[in-house]
Length: 277
Length: 277
Image (tube, rainbow over all chains, first blue to last red):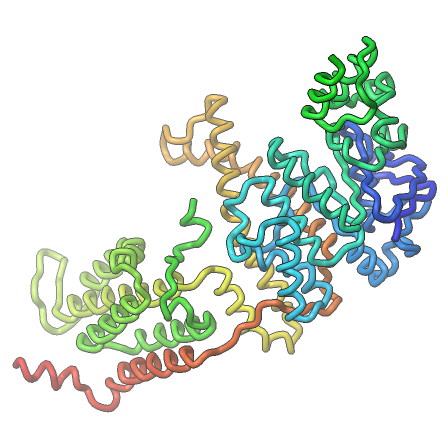
């Protein structure tokens, strides 16, 4: 189960001239990996996400999911791909259909034609996976942003996807909400679901297996977080910022402090600094 | 804000709340038809007592029930006054210049007012004891025979439930936009009606633009979750009739038929009135 991009270009049709959002991208996302796609606004990262489940189909090149090519010609192939590649969007309020959380989560399985009894089990599973069991019969309206996004993730999980694409799902959240959503994403990845996290916050890339940096529609950097964070000049060139702990660690390393390469967040850095004194 | 989310739903676990929404909806229709046929004071009183009894069983405070009548007070007054002055009868009770009030006019005004109040009360009990979602489901279920003549019943029900879900979100957005415009010096509560209406334009334009953007995103999210009008869907929530629904239906229909038939079979209001004569 993998997603493969082969020389993919996507142009948004415009009235006078079309806008090229993704330029000749070749990429393979491995099974079970946690990939973070970073880039500033307009870098094409969201378009890349929408190409993964056939919401958009390439202007040239091909995208395959599990060997199946995305195309608008076959509705049933698209249906199969979308049931495997679950997608959570940026604004939680704009992706919820129902007024009761249980109904919201049932929507996906209902569309897939899952039998009634099984939908009940799937709702229970999806809600426990995101830690929102006690909200099953409530309305999403009063939840915090982070909780709403967790519901949106549960709604996708109930469809039993192999790949979870978070298309800037943390962009509208406060730090607490962002941490909640990331924790859920990590937990799901540990359970074997491939996670593709689209974001413009580099600190979210820390926990990923692989970071892909996009700029002006092209993939400009690709590697592990350590490899990417090492090249600070290049990161700045693409208008991204190193997470504060990593920035500080890099500066300290330059001054000759023995700080390890892998730093997860502020606490670990504080510990490393204490040890080096 | 709470009121808006749930319409006028008054949460409780009474037996009336737990009745099948379809049964309640059909009984409300039967009630309305009955009221249109009733013309006797005694039957009005009987129906009034019946409504009070239902409210009591539903544990709806009478204050809340009668609040719903307040919304149509103006309508009641206007129809009563029109009937009072414009009904011509045989017994002239009072006249001044061209204004003549007949006994029949007074009687008709009172009866119409009573009828309007009664018409408002029972359907109010329906909306007080049933969530909008249950009502939507009930309508979908009752309209489902229309599927045979290719009416997209499910799509209609989905549109209704999404509309319900969007109401609180759009209200919140309106408040935000109004605050934003106020911060720029806009004023919404000064000047005449025309000026006030004009002041709403800078609120409505961004509201509509926002609503369309939301609709677009929601459609994308539904696509991503395999919503299609072609594929066969299953339904998670199935409405089941219980014994209590049958009992409620029998009791209500018995009351309605007595009220209905009284006019034709045995005019016992006259019998009762004759006791006092």
